[in-house]
Length: 230
Image (tube, rainbow, N blue to C red):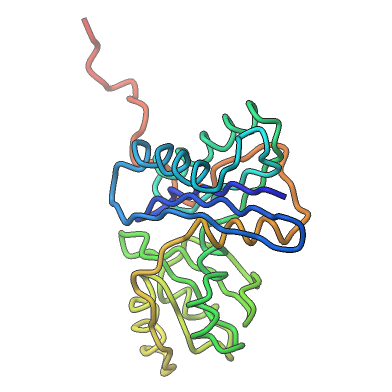
């Protein structure tokens, strides 16, 4: 099975090709931290890894993308690319949320040491994207858009680790409840490399990929009080 994975949901852009040859596999990946410019960076990354992996697009069996939460524009970039490539190649689709991909990162699993842990991403405006996972990175609850104090209330009694850009905010909230958790991996981002492995390891497939938006867009249609255009 040949899997192409794409992520543009948060503060990085990444693409990965997981190529299975008989009993072995090879991974070719690119990732760059960036606040913007994902649309311009993604397809050159894809071209690089496909060339490096010596794989034709027609040989792809599965195309995976993170579906959010994340930035409104960023989430749509990977999904649109995955849809387009699947249409051209006939490959199947797989999608999952960006927090689950972060939970599957070996750095997260190593720090968790087999115990439940939280993924907390700063969603701005005093809110978190929050998910709770077991020691193997499997989802228990989430993802939610939630205030840190409410996330602290949901935190499992055994969870004492939080990873992600919102981990410190969650740690502060739990401290106010008399609970101490360790905030780690504050720069953690979703990675297409771990998305590819997740996609290859499951039989789940999606008929269509849709963005997972946990908050309404900032831009709103003009109401009746808007000034009429001439």
